[in-house]
Length: 575
Image (cartoon, rainbow, N blue to C red; front, side, top):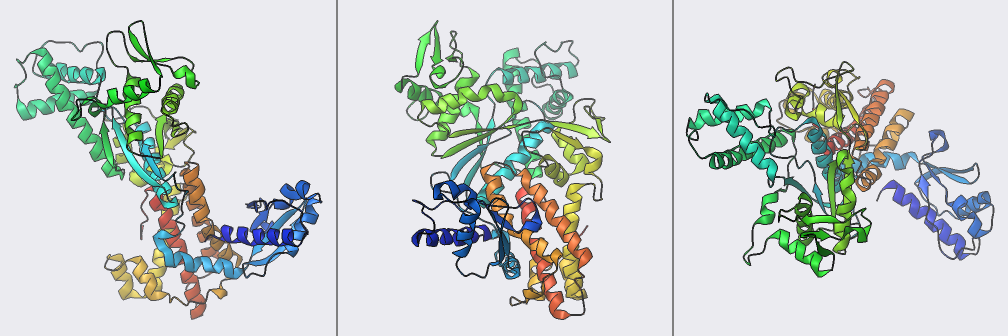
C-alpha cells in the first residue's frame, strides 16, 4: 500500500473515532483530502479536511483540525503533526517510514508503484500515429509514436489493459494518386516524356520507389495498360511504405498489437456483410440515419454536432467519416471499455461528430480524443525545416538518425501533448547537463559505477561485460537486513521522499494521459541523487553506513531505470 493511502487510512480512522464519540457531528465521514504542501518546510503531507468539513461540523476549521489530531490512532508512520494557518493539518513522516521505501523498491523492482483501476474501465484501445502509407512519416508522427507508446506503458503500470493499434489509411483516392505518381516517375526514369499530374505525390521518395521497381523488374510494366499499371504500382508502393513504417517504428521501440487496415472494413464476412454496412445497420436500427437529396445522412445534431453528416454521397461514394464510423463500431464490437485516439491538433473540428457516433450507439463518453501539438525543429535556436540531404522536410527517420532514439523520445515527452515542442537538435546531441536525457541517464550510469566500485574488480568486470546484471551485483553487495536507520541526512531523506511519490505519480499520469510528467520526475530524482552524492560520501570506512547508502543508491537506480523504461528510454550502466 502506498504511503499516501496509509496516511489516508490513519486520518479516516481519526475522523470515525471523533464521529463515534460525538466530537464531530457529521452524518458521513469526509475524504482525508491529502496534498503536498507548497513549502516543504511545512511537512511531507497536508490535509485540508478540517477546512472542508468545518461548515458541516459547525465548528471553526482549526477546532476541527485539533479534534482530528487528538483522535489519531497510534502509528509509527508519523513523526510529528502541527495545525497551521486556517486549519491545515501538516504531517511529517518518520524516518523509518521513508527508509522503508528503500526496502519496498529493492524488493519489488519493476513492479514498484504498480496499481489497479476500477473494474469496467480497464480494457482500453489506444490508437495512434495512423499515418497514410503514401510517404515517409514526419516529425509530428514521431511525437505521436512517443506519446502513444509511453502512454500505453504508463497506463499498463497503473493497472489498465491497453491494446495498441495502428489504423492504416489504405482505402480511398489518395492510394490511387500515390500509385499514379509512382507510375509516372517509372515512365520518366525509362525515358518517356510524361509530366507529373497536378494531383500527385512529388517527393524524391516516389522516384526512389520507381527506381527500385526498375532495378528489380526492369521494363516489365512499360507497355502495360495505364490503369493496370497504376493499380500494380499502387500495391507495390503501398506494401513498401507500410513495411518502412513498421521497420522504423520497431527501430524506435514502438510496437502495436494490431495494424488495422481500413480496407478490411469493406471485405464481406461469411454472411456477405462488411463492417461498413454492419455499422450502418446499427445506426439505422436506432433511428439515427435518414435519406435526403439522394444521400445517406447521420443525424449527428441529435447529439450536439453543429450539422448532420453525410455517410454515403449522392453518387454512392462512401465518405471518409463513414469509414471512421465503421472502424469505431468495430472497436466497440471487440469489447473495449474505452477508446483513446491520439490525433494532431488540426483534427480538432472532427471530434464532435465522432463523439456523436459513439453516443448514437449508446456509448457516451467511451471515446476520448487526445490532441497533440506539432514539433518545431531547431538548430542552435534557429528553425530547421529542410533536410540537407534531400532539400525537403526533415523526416522522423532522419531525426532519429541525427540524435538517436533516446533523445528523440525523451525530448518529445518533455512537455504536455497540448503544448508545442521546440526540439533543439544541438541540445539533443550534447553530452552535458544541458541535455535532460543525458543528465538523467548519466545519474543512472553513475550509480551503476558506484555499485561496481564497491563490489571489487572481479565483479565489476563481470558486470561491465554483461556476465552479471546490476541487480545481481547489488544483491550480492547489500544484505536484505541492511540497517537503514543510519540514513538520516536531509539529502538522503529527500531522495527517499521523492521515490515514495512514484506510485501516485504513475497513477495520475495514467489517469490524465500525461506521461510527460515522468520526464520531470526523472530529472528530479537525478538531481536529488547528484545532491546526495555531493553531500554524502557513499564509499566510506564505516561498513554499515556504506552498505545503507549503497541500498539507497540502488533503490534510486531501480526507480530511475523504471521511469525511463516507461518512457521507452534506455538506462545505460556506463557512459
